[in-house]
Length: 178
Image 1 (cartoon, one colour):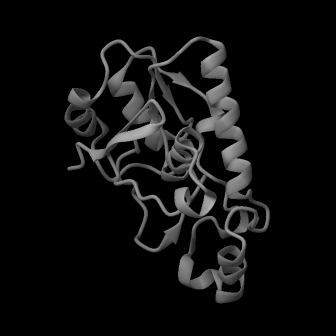
Image 2 (image 1 turned 90 degrees about the vertical axis):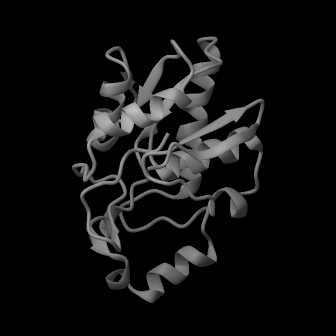
């Protein structure tokens, strides 16, 4: 599931920046709970916008740094309009491998999501709840559904929504969105 709406102005690139929530995590948890499997372990990004939701879903949630959002480096907390067309054109030309100054590429994000998934498999965990970010969710869909990069990079996830991936396909998408 994607975290609730963050307290960030529209049009700001916030990526890995640890920002507060604009929505009540408890209300979002209550709305999403009916969509979740009972007794499945809950894993969360360490960023508070995810952690606050995970805390309301499970007192025994686990935090894993591999679920943190993509690092936009020098672009963090800048208006997308101020980043500049040349920088954004470089990203559009090579969306999987472009690295913002001081940040990481979507390919690097996909690699860490793959490492997290492999760790779940090694533990024999087949049903889990992830509280994460749009970038992480895109990468998981790409990985589990074997989607080409140009397809998974364009996926969209609503704030405070859940998506079910079962047997390598999305069964439902953006459920529980308020």
